[in-house]
Image (cartoon, rainbow, N blue to C red; front, side, top):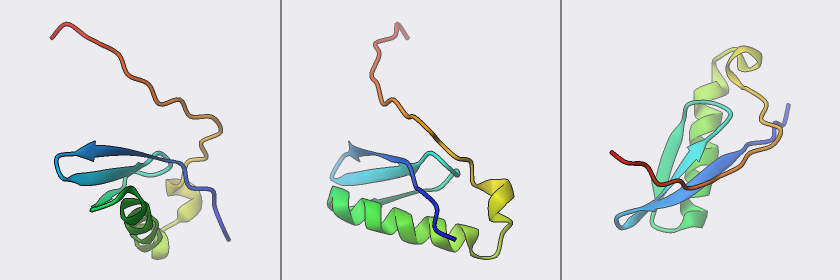
Length: 71
């Protein structure tokens, strides 16, 4: 059954990192499009032999933000 995948993509050095918000899976690629495609594959493989209803968390609204901290 198809599921809506929520993710964030950010640059880390020379690569783009894609991180899934529904399950604890991430991937990377040379472009943001490649990172997203690799993430889709990685999540599908992760869920292939698992109980998807237990592992996959629905994410309704997601806010990606940036904050400055004193550390």
